[in-house]
Image 1 (cartoon, rainbow, N blue to C red):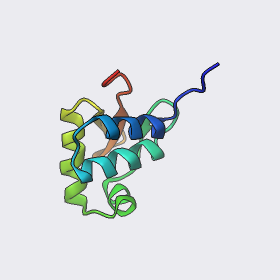
Image 2 (cartoon, rainbow, N blue to C red):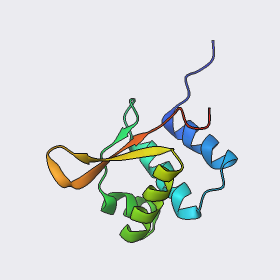
Image 3 (spheres, rainbow, N blue to C red):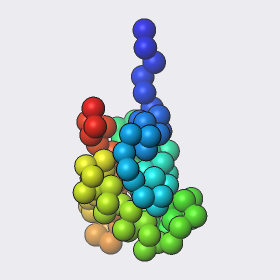
Image 4 (cartoon, rainbow, N blue to C red):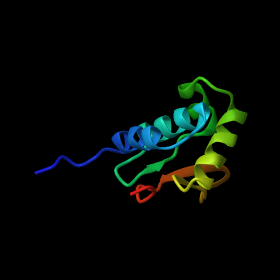
Length: 94
């Protein structure tokens, strides 16, 4: 029986088959690592920036690019309209 692919494994596979900017690659890896089993990441932009070693503005641009590519969906938190949640779209590129 095949092992279930983790979110991080999925992210590495997407990076290997897609032409993503370095900041998009870093953000996708951080988001996948921080996500729960449903693919939801509730990390703040500053946390993603620190983990990826890039600026907060670069995270905003990178996550917008990942959303355009269909790899993630960015939504507002219901309890804080200034904060985002990131939902991984594992169906992308399948």
